[in-house]
Length: 144
Image 1 (cartoon, one colour):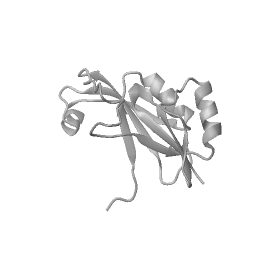
Image 2 (spheres, one colour):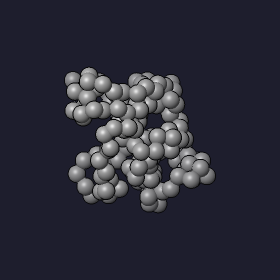
Image 3 (cartoon, helix red, strand yellow):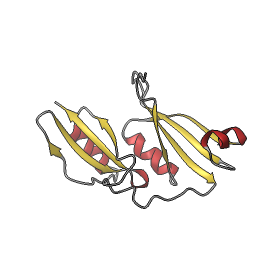
């Protein structure tokens, strides 16, 4: 059975912007390659595939925590106009725990990251949704 989540992959058009966003959350580039050729096309089920594949890891995290960023050169990626809506089917959002939500928000907002909504507080945690790369939603939580 599953031991832990190994990684989450995000397809992006703005690779530098996505690396910057996840870098602000503490992730660092661990590897960067171009994937292409028959083996990757078969594996991903995408004909004539060529893409940048960047692995960003959270230093010191055990087990290893990774975000994989994929920027397609070919074929042209499909756009999901509904990706910003949380009332759609599919991946809803990514959630990350932080030690101090208010301090983390101050750093992120100073760097141009926008909230999707105001922070809310529950008895055991605080939560906030952020606008992530390519319109994906990222949630930060501080557990009491």
